[in-house]
Length: 588
Image (cartoon, rainbow, N blue to C red):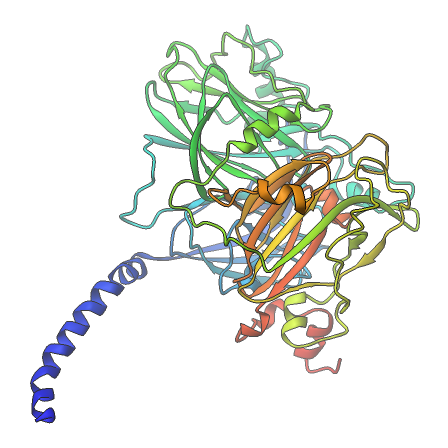
C-alpha cells in the first residue's frame, strides 16, 4: 500500500517541490541572468600632464588621468587585464571598498594579497561586485596613489531594484591632492635621516583638475581668472563644470583619494542631504558642508532650488592640518547660464582647520538607515591599537603598539595558505599597550620602536573589536587626524571618545542600536574610535591609516582569517619571494 500511495503522490510532490524551489531561487536566477562580466584592458604608464596648469608627470591608465571610471551593477563580474608599462617599477591596483568575497587575491595589495606586477607583465583582476555604492580604485604600492593612479568605481543596484531616495540626475566627484615634487623624491625623504616630510600639497583636484597660482576665485567679480587658467593650462586643468537644471534633485557621489589632506566640501547657498557613506545607506541628514577624509565616500542629494540666473561655487578646503593649499573650486552651472559666468558671491569658507567640534558634530550624525544589519551584541576578541610616532635607529616612523609595519617580500596570502613559516614573523603582534602608565597626551617617554610584520590571526566567524587609540606625536602638543581603512570588510563604528579608552566607563557609551557600517573611520586627535566586525571573509587583509606617507612609515597591521578555507590561489599572484621559488619548482 505504501508503494502504491507513494507512486500516486510522487508526481504531485515533485511538481510542488519544483515550484517552491523555483520561487525561492527566482531572485537569484534573475540576478544571475541579468549579471554581466565587464571587461577592461588597461595599460599603466607615466605621462606628462598638467593637473593644476603646471606640467608634471602623472601615472595614467590608457593615457587618461584620472583613470577610466568603472560602472557596473550588483552581481556583475569585473575583469581588468592590467599591463604594467612602467619601465622600472612594479604596480598593483586596490579596489577600495569592494570586499572581494571569494577572491582575496584580487584585493590589489602588494606583499599582502599578491606580488607586484613587474614591468612588461600583465595581471588579470577578476572579482564580483556584491553591494551598490560609491567606490574608487587606486595604486597600493609605494606612493603611486599620490602619483595619480586612481579612478572612480560606481556600483548601481541590480535591475529592478530601487534606491531608498529619489533623484533626477547624478554627478560624480573624485577628490585628490597634488604635489609638484615627484613621488620618488617624497618617498625617499620619508626614509631619510634627517627626516624630510612631504609637506603640504600644492593643489587640490576635483576630477583630476585644479588651478595652481591661478585661483578661479581670485577675482570672482570678473572672468579674468578663468581666462588666465584656460590660457595656461588648456583642457587638462580647466575645471569640470557641473551642469544642472533648476528645481531638480541631483545625487552627488563623492570619494576622496587624497594622499594626505582631510577635506571639507560645500556648495554656495545650497544645503546637502547625506544619504550614503562608504557604500552603505545612512539616516538622511542635512548639512551646509561635510568633512570627507582620505578613503571615505559619500552620496549627498542636492536640490537646485536657488536663483536660476546665477551660478554657484563648489569648494573643497583642507581640514585637520594648517592649510597651506588653496581651495579647490569648480562651478555649479545652472542651465541656461553660460558656464563661464562666475558666481556673484565668494566661494564658501572652509571651517577653521582645527575646529574639531565641527568635525565631530558631523561625524556623530552618521547613523545606519533602518534595515541595516546590526552588530553582534558581544565581541569574542578586542584588539587595542595605540597609534604613536616613534624613532627606529634615528629614523622617524609610525607604529601600532610600538611595532612599525614592514611588509615581507612574500605575499601573506600565499605564505599562510602554504605554511611558509619563514616568510614573516610568527610571533603574535601585541593586542594592547600599557594603558595604565602610558600618557597619550604627551610625547612618548621612550620614543624607540621596532619593526615587525606579524599577523593578527582571527578565528573564522568570530566577532572582533578594534579600538583605535590616538596619542601625542614626537613633538609636544601635536596629535594628528588618522583615517583608517579596512580591506575585505565593512565594520560598525560603535563610537568615538576623547582621551584614553576605558572599558569601565566607555563600554556603556558604545552604540549597538544603529551604528553606521563603514570601511573607513577617523580617529580624532587625543581620542579613540571603537570598531566591530565579523571575521567571515577568508583572506589576508590590510588595516591601515589611509594617509599614504603614514602607511609607508609603518602605520598599519595585517589581519588573516579562514585562509585554510580557500581551495586554491592563482599562481600568477605568487611569483615572488618564497612562493615564487615554490611555484618555479625551486626549493625553499
